[in-house]
Image (cartoon, one colour):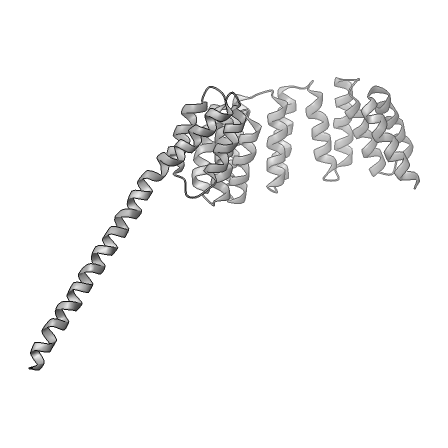
Length: 276
């Protein structure tokens, strides 16, 4: 037998094996594609089952949704659309969007979280939770311009809301911008001079920086606005204790304890610890 005659069958066998391998690879690829396309409907069926079992308990369904959303195997877009249709009248969209943004952040997808939260802030500018989440993203990415823009939107739409001014001041302070936080609290007090809560928040804010004289002034003004607010007297007591004026501190602690039983217990603990 000639050498060329031996090579021909061998080459043919190799070609057949190669062709069969290509067929197997093609079948596997198509199978994977088929699994991917059917993945979401199957997952949705699971969620539908959960929903039917848990209704009327939307909170439980909501927690399941958030749990599933955090898994990378899920198509988030389809899952979010489905859940919004199921629960749109039972759980506020802002709750859903906040949790979804946290999932995005945990997976490093800050752009998606930012877009979702910015839309939510536009719809609900007085929502302090949205402010916190969005503020954290801006601060961690050194987006000072966006942080200031967020504050401007919230203040313009929520003028006079003490919670908003308080929250924004804390966001700026945590972002190492004490002065801007101070300006926000000053603006809040200017918009509502009789808002005693803002005054003692401002007093606390100043006291934390060692600005005791300014802090004392704000605490005293808070008491003038509301003589029955135990927190104002207690805060003054703390300030006087920090500055070594223990007798005066005790005087204001006692007033706070007389107004509120809750502070009576706190004051008692302070005195006990001081005597040890």
